[in-house]
Length: 169
Image (cartoon, rainbow, N blue to C red; front, side, top):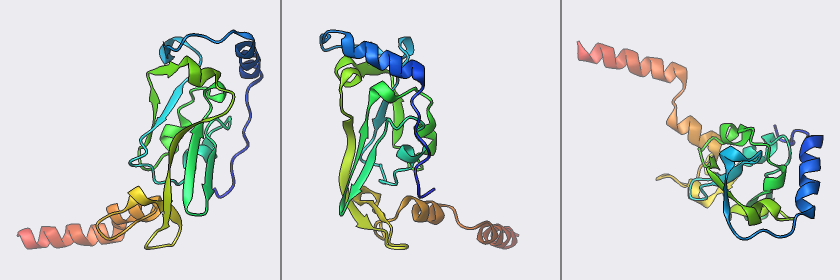
């Protein structure tokens, strides 16, 4: 999964994008995403682990992710988003969700709009870069090591259950 999956924008979406470019600038307002063929990806930057999985799995490239040295940036281009919800499913920390409204300014923006950014540090277990906000009481953990720390191995879990059942009797 180190490489991005191919990004393809459906022809119908490209035609809709071209139409938006001909429309005069609209007043600043919010549109209900339930009534339009677009979605609004929102990211809780406080819990984003900067893993980039949302970007890797986005089928249209609507979520460009870039890590530069000790910082990262996740952006969103609403015109490319097809509302497939894959980004929310791919996010291991639950930081990505779809919003109920979408700003006309964000929809008609020519460039992606930043939705999360921050500093990167090395995971204390594996050394992979992770967001500073991924810090635990023992130190910063990437999304993989954090998941492993939360869920002990199946064998260890079985041993713990066996031990607990034996000590209760």
